[in-house]
Image 1: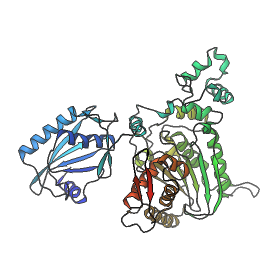
Image 2: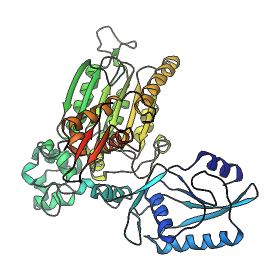
Image 3: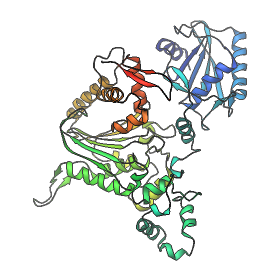
Image 4: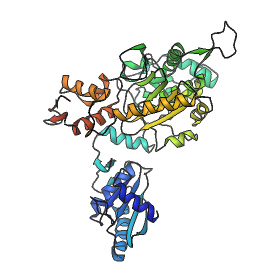
Length: 477
């Protein structure tokens, strides 16, 4: 970091990646900051900066040496597992600042010596206590895969044997019976059955008779709107697509083919024409959403068709610290390796991060938005290749998103999803985030949680009573 970069950070204030400290406080408090960065996306702690104002105070030589030593001790002794940090001294305006770099950790969740787990939340941090969020941290580090978990109440009787026979014939070239092995042992060896005899989530979702009997949220909510706003009340078609993962993929593609335009493209008059969006683009993006769904935060995949674009919204942000730039270059990390393996062997899914790259090679304008706070990944396919039209449509889309995500202290009107959450808790004051997410198909549980926070900031929603016996109180906007 150089002088100009340091001064710019001071001017911009604290963020989810930047924390100010006038001086080293205590091992316990600094350990919390390091843990929060390591469990999130990393960041820097700047020592010698006034917390509230961002004023560069500076440190003496003795303070620099002592702070650097204490930081090393904190990272080694107060953080579990121990984490590696880097420090450097930057001089600006004749004052010295110590910069502590904390990388995103590979062995999440990190804890303080007292067992606390912290993550960043904006410029602040918060303590993690919910099991699902702790499991998410394990999942981010690759130490846990929700797809391998047994589904309570399931058994071999919930499998559609025809699907399994087709799989074995396609992959191994012979029938299940030809292996002369106990069926349960074979199913456990390929990850379809858990050690206790229950079906794994991957096994159920790929080979089950009716997966939604147990996994209610695993579906595609497909809607074709009139116009370009998700708040529109008119639509051309709307359906819930259920079944196994391969069935949902096929039905999702059928929905898109029925809605999108076909062009002749120099074909004969009697030809049905070519789909306006190359099918390879739709196939790759829809398969990615199905295979990489976040099973720890169950919600429906949304397949939304507007007049100017198609949106495929996956309830699961990019996995393993990947960024949009990474996937555009072909980088890949598999949240659900079992499901990816099944798909690679039986569908046109190729994995290895090549799907996004293949889609981008087509004559189509694509946008990818990784929504950290609401735990969503949004793929947008624009239905035109004309640059002027695209620029106008993107500007309209951006304006619409800004209205929905406006600062709650200045927002005059609630977004559609904020209204939906407020209305839900007005009608069901003892409802939970999970209940609201099930009732509002546009939102995941993380999305509801995010909107609750904004509504509370706006003074429109507050919690009365305890966590178990309490209820929500709403106010009119």
